[in-house]
Image (cartoon, rainbow, N blue to C red):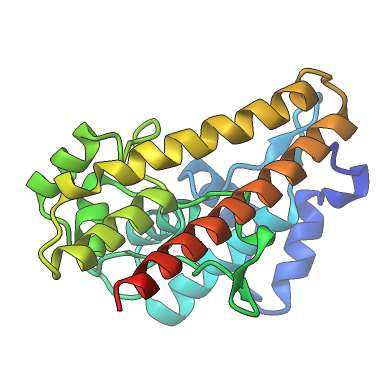
Length: 241
């Protein structure tokens, strides 16, 4: 959806909004921060900068980090990149950014909520960050990738990869190895195929309404499949008693 024209701010308007907290801020300083790659405002056809609320908040973060934490621009830029990738930035020089906690699947009266599915997946982790955050070893990660249980998207791993990695690490404490978990991948693929069969007629219609309906159906069936899986596992465990 297009952003309304007045959702953008001129550089002068940005200056006015920042001066209350940062009296020394100047247009030259804003341009310098842009030249250093800390902000990237859009441009009008005639070349004027137009800032969004996100640009404004990034500027606030940069100025606060300089003033209150005495962080150099190199560290601030690394922190902005970390936040863009879904990480908690470091507040000290030489610190390490860490992944934000992955939200657990929501439940309602013990049942999986459909809203747990289809959320935007913003986290982007390097290989080293994934290993550190999950506790996996390099050999375990290589094995999981060979089973297609974890995959890299572009140059980064996402929050789904982190969730799988953490689960595998915790299961390993019970003596369950990665090779024992391949059936989970196969079962997931079958469920994905079933959902795809249901939503394909909707996605072929190309209209915005059909796309929205397909996304809703996808979430609902995914939620139901998790509930069914959990019920079957519980039932099977009850029979073992």
